[in-house]
Length: 453
Image (spheres, rainbow, N blue to C red):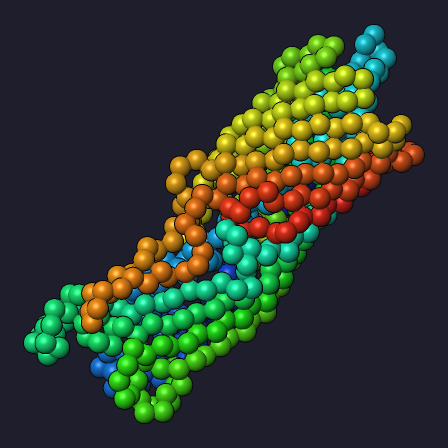
């Protein structure tokens, strides 16, 4: 596949995806937002039972007291959940796309520059060789199970009341209304439990072409399938009194203090198309050094969790060396993520990978790597701090069990490559999280079929 044809394929897929990625109310991002909406209206955490439509003053008094527009901490909690999901799905890893036995030409004769089939989730410095190509199709499957170590099927949130203060409030309540807890109804809280079941499957179609003995170019075209099932359960906890001020339905004397919501959704389409190049800058009998550049374009719909919604790029250096059938490699570089409108920007990161690939038998290679992505600066996904009450007594409420921490990603990769006749290679791999940062799957399985020619 010539570079001009690669460029034509990429341009076509970008144009088609832009036409097909219009946002709808049935998008998966909107489905997540619906988990925080109970009853009529479209405002998260709106209490329809506490609002009398015939009395606008009643709506202002109680129905809106938990909505994000009134309580910034509640908005931050909801934004954190949706942002964590969107940024994690849009930053899914891509495996190596220039595997197989590599060659270079000496005196017009192809000579092997590698014996094993290469790494799976890392890059080696060897290039394919002038005129050689790899095309393949791979599939990665994710079942996200945790967010910063907290199980996705048991996320606990606590939404607090607006700090009410209006003209004459101090005299009416007999206290300082600027303090949290005055009036007394400010002590009401909403306990919230969230259960998310999110499955992502990515089918990558990729091709790499050896332009020269030192330069490879290629692309990755991902097709993404996303399935979401979510349930939410909310419970109003009144602080006291013979009647209730906040409830989902009913009356002040006979209130409905709990509500639940279920959503289901799925989406399928083009993900974020990637373009890659590798240039080998040094070569000796035992060691090689190369530079790799990768650009991912926002061709996938972020609203349907098919892409990041913004451009991202990576650049890193690769060093690899070999002793007979054993090859070691290391990658070190930088990942930049552009901001997406309306979504938290994914932190830039230092990317580092180290591992080896070993030819176990004439057609079987083992590949193992430590794959890391260490974020730069403080996380752009921020949780609200604790809420302090001053009356009727001093106390502090933590809004969630999700910890405030860095979203560094450390994974272990372990897999095999089986070279079968006629130039085909079968790839199997498991990517296992080794830390708690970010939204993670217990294990990510990968399979691929490549053809070298």
